[in-house]
Image 1 (cartoon, rainbow, N blue to C red):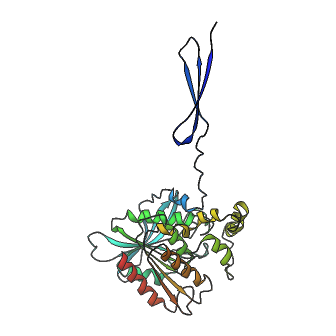
Image 2: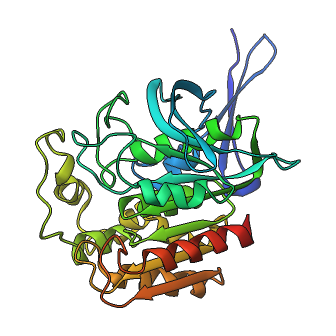
Image 3: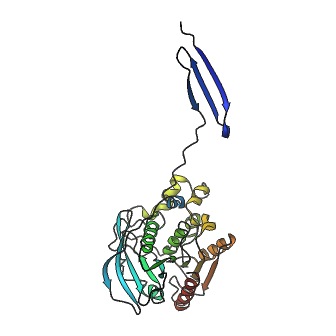
Length: 342
């Protein structure tokens, strides 16, 4: 008759986990079964709108393909180009200075435009004076369209309820780095309004963006976007997909309001990660801006300085969302800032 002896031993191993050994003896060699009851819980998947989800992604971009050569500027060439973002063909405006290229390559700027109804947006229109200011001062410039704009593939998802536009910009940045005329160590980013939101977001994700300039930017946390920003003049265009403008309600219903669940909303906000920002920031805002409150730029300036980051704030009395009254001064300051830091 087989004699069976069942032995249990409980030991405490490194980390305090309880491990049980069970050995059953018989005529065969003893067999040991190991079970660990305090298994570590799997790392939760970040919410797709969170900053961490962007940090976990890769942005390979692609080679920039010249689709059309456009009429040149005063001292620079202009091109209609394409690149890839998440399998979608995206289009952009690219400008390259005419002249002797610096030994290391030209410095470059990724130019993030503000909200324009996707159905009205055209790659070669709007922001002409803005892009010209940088292009004629010795910078390669790329202005991504964002998906769903003009000929760019994909659905226009909106700038705040989705990371899609930021993903497109980061892939444009990766594509720009592949260009043989670009100095990859001297790339900055400029953004206006919604483009300022994307610029700030990009700079807490990619630590190689050397400097950022933001005009009239939507640069506050998600709780502030919900509680302190309602654009009275904004009418959602019919070209936007159903539900895009309802991200506030959708997320609040699913995860609770910022008051009910502040930790969740912090994970979405670039402002929670300012200690990791990749470079100095220059901010411009008009006091008569009726689209984005000047307080947004003032608040970001304080937040950056609180974490000992360089922030250069310029306020323009009675100026509008486009800083039209002081455009020349604001552009000169922006170029000087990039000249200093790039």
